[in-house]
Picture 1 (cartoon, rainbow, N blue to C red):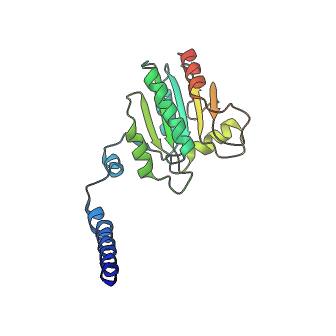
Picture 2 (picture 1 turned 90 degrees about the horizontal axis):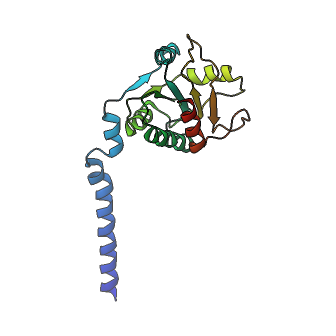
Picture 3 (picture 1 turned 90 degrees about the vertical axis):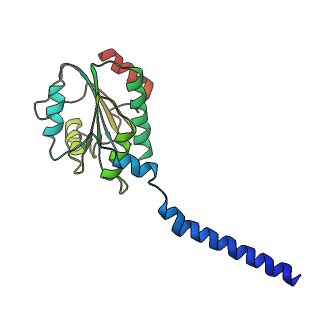
Length: 200
């Protein structure tokens, strides 16, 4: 009985040592993970230093229907909204439709790296990504929409004829996932898609 108990102790110790070896040596020396590989892919992410960078692209795209989303690159609700926009882009291959995704730091996990990762998950020549590290877009649309909180997790549609000339105008249609707003309906992929099709 004593020998059997000793044998079990030895087996448990060997398993513990093997686990520690895996955690502290093998795992640390594994090849780059998918996350780091996505970050290392060259990205079309534009870092915003001022809002004119968005306005210039928007006005140059006059004649196109433009969808704009203000999102967190890690918040689950924002990522669900982003997934919905990807579905819309896939279902509507029209070249007259352009998308602007503006990532903003809302939570501590919202970093440039997380924005790059999300931007590299979905590529489309009609889509432009921005990293708004100073929340310029959120502050700007807060004023445009006359709401009492930073604008984010919002989804806008602008028709072909809209031009800003530096400052954005109110969207022709918009939805939100941001809580506390009654000015717009909750984001719904199918309903948003139908509005996009109407404007096209």
